[in-house]
Amino acid sequence: MKRTFLVLGLFALTGCAGRSQFQKGYERGAADTVKRQYWIAQNLQKPGKNPERHLSVYKLTVPPDPDAKVKTVPYEIAIPIVN
Figure 1 (cartoon, helix red, strand yellow):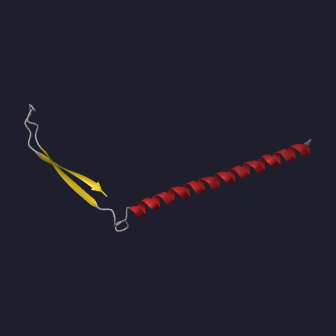
Figure 2 (figure 1 turned 180 degrees about the vertical axis):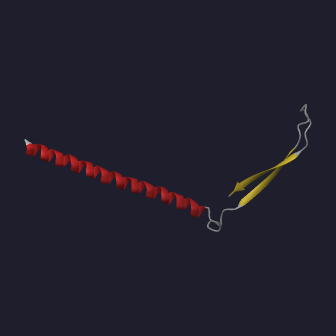
Figure 3 (figure 1 turned 120 degrees about the vertical axis):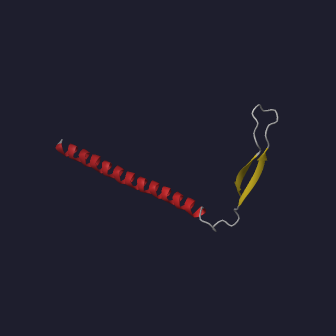
C-alpha cells in the first residue's frame, strides 16, 4: 500500500515538473516572438531602408460656405500621404 502511494506521488511530482518546464519554454517562445516583432517594426522605420516609400503632402483650400449664417475665411489643410 505504501509502495502504491509512493509510486503515485512520484508520478504526480514528475507530472508537475514537466508542466512547469513546458510552461517556461512556452513563455520564453512567446517572449521571443514579441521581441522579433518589435525589431521588425523598428527596422522598417529606419530611414533609408525603404527607398520606394516617400511622403506626399496634398494641400486643399476650403472655401467658406456662402449659405452659412456665420461668415468664415478660406483656410488650407494639408493631407500627408506615405507611399
